[in-house]
Image (tube, rainbow, N blue to C red; front, side):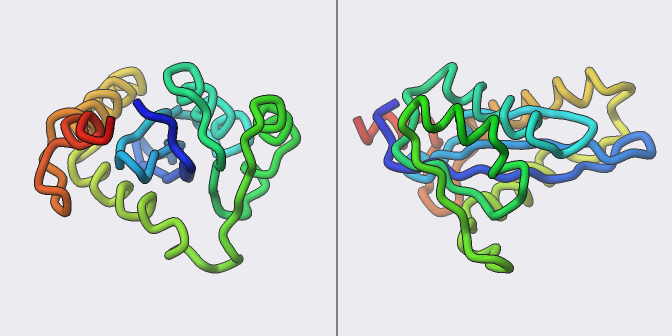
Length: 158
């Protein structure tokens, strides 16, 4: 993947077996692909940190990492990591979810394509289902706006 100017990050909740499961993702708006993600039983700095580490383990860090103003995105742990990698943290204005529109739209697609969570027997199956859904989104699904697979679109940018 070519170096990106900015990535955006956010999390969503998924209802599963009587509890909320949190999914944090990092998206590259340039390629529209999910570059990192993590799953946890609570949304906190650790959930976000794991998603960002997942992204950094696979791709060169962007110049900017954007999010809302949640405390998990402004944690010392994430600020320290980004400072070491010379990544600037950027935040949306309060009560302005449209400033992170790529992420908001992705979560609707993720939940639609994941389907009913009742089909999973345990958390490991849900995790596998999320991994398969994100893989499908990044590599197989035809993006509605781009009219092509995201992997092909990303390759065309090189």
